[in-house]
Amino acid sequence: MDASRVSPVNLILLGPPGAGKGTQARMLEDRFGLVQLSTGDLLRAAVAAGTEAGQRAKAVMEAGDLVSDEIVIAILRDRLSQADCAGGVILDGFPRTTVQAEALDALLFDMDQGIRAAISLEVEDQAMVERISGRFTCAGCGEGYHDIHKTPAVAGVCDKCGGTEMTRRADDNAETVASRLSAYHAQTAPLIDYYDGRGVLARVDAMAEIDVVAQELSAVVRQATA
Ligand code: ADP
Ligand code: ZN
Image: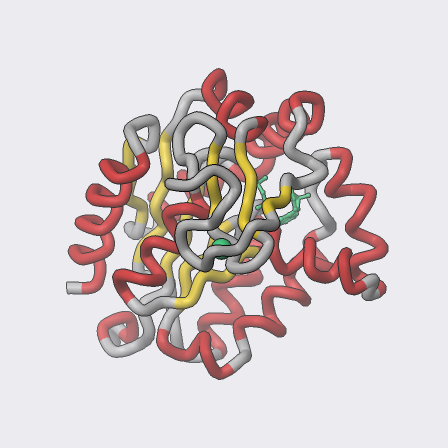
């Protein structure tokens, strides 16, 4: 039986740091009523809260390396079991290794669910350093901005919530970005083949403007959920 027809729509966004996964995941949340689940955000929250996992993850994240599968899978499992995820999730930044992808398959299988689509945001590495070093986020609502590509209508004021506190991530600097990109190519890029082999892979050109990428991505999601 093909359970994917009746079960929640679970999507994966694949792509290197800076590809726009977070921005597009928020867009998909609004348009399709799914819940964005970012392991980067969950880990940063754990670091800020000073949990044991957070303390172990902090230095690893600052160096641009991957946090251990064990920690990330535990965090993801907890979040996925919460009630608001029952209608479907957009996984942003997870899985990042084959071990994580297999753990996810097992978790979803136990919940009688599956992956409806894994969407690869395809970009060129050279553009990623510029994208990442220009980005900042509203501390109030999490909306993402960029010094060049997406400025708020009024400088310093969030378009979405009117907040005026903007934050930049500690790991969004040129040196760390280089490590994050190489971790992506070594450990995460093989997942493109992994999901292609399962027949759920879609590719979207993510070098275009944010709105253009959003259109193309929405079309892919509509098709995957039809
Ligand atoms: P980006 O995609 O821009 O690198 P994220 O917010 O997704 O940003 O991740 C930031 C950092 O958090 C990563 O560099 C890594 O250290 C850690 N991290 C996030 N998700 C995972 C994961 N699934 N596995 C291992 N480490 C992760
Ligand atoms: Zn805001």
